[in-house]
Every structure is written in C-alpha cells, then in structure tokens.
Image (cartoon, rainbow, N blue to C red; front, top):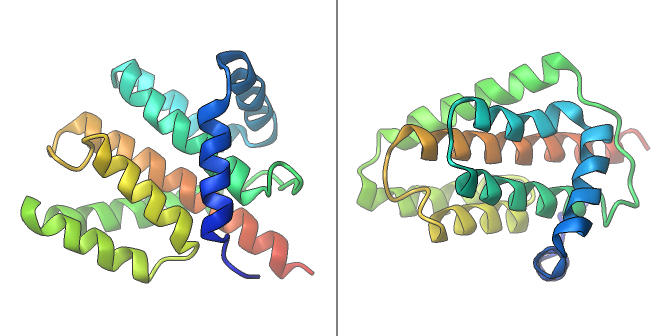
Length: 169
C-alpha cells in the first residue's frame, strides 16, 4: 500500500471546498451509516459545549479524510471495532500529553517532526496545517484540545481502515 499522493489530497480539498451544504449533508449521512463510531467523534463535541464553528472545522477534516482514504468513496470499509477505537483514543491522549510538554513556540517544530514519522504524511500534514491555520494550536484550552483529539482520532481511524483494507489482499 502506498501513501495517498499530495495531488490526490489537494484534489480532495478542492472538491470538499466546492460542495454545497446539501451535498455535504449527503456525504455526512453516508459516513454516519458506514462509520457511526467515527462520526461519533464529531457528535460528542457538541455534548461538551464546543462551539459549532469549531465543530465545523472538524467536520471539514472528516470529509477530507473520508474522501481521501476511501478514494472518493470507491473503497467500502468495515466498521471499526470498539477495541480498535479504544486503542486509537489511548494513542491520541498519549500524543497530546507529550505535545503539551512543549512550549507554545516549540509546538510547530514538534508538529513537523511528528509528520515525518506518521503514516499518510500528506493527509496528516494537511490536518496539522489546517488546525494550526484555524487557531487550534495557538491556545491551550479545552475546546481546542477536544477538537484536536477528535480530528486525530478520526484520522487514525481512517489510517487503520485503509491499512486493514490493503493488508487483507
């Protein structure tokens, strides 16, 4: 299995940015039907009072991940198990705790270094850049933390699904 090419990531981002609200809703419905646990990572944000504008950014990333990892919905993934989801959650919490040890000025360097050691580097780099560009890494508050955790968990879920899909062959 080779990583998703940067060209494909850019194409997917342009496509997502061109979608109307109704078109996005149709894709969100398919994500919910096919991966309800992954979609739940976004839904839970509203239950901890994350502002809707911030949730919108996580929804944007969900669309990009879903379309990138499923090759424009041509790959149908099985639903992740609860054990797989718990393992991903634990890995994310560990990474975030390590991230918080760094001074804010050093976090950008830490994020770049993380990208080099991560699967699907092009998609991961987009996620990190998007979160930084939209202010999620500027201030260490609960809402930013929840959104970062949610985005990374969603990313990791799709990495696992894609890896499992290609390893089964």
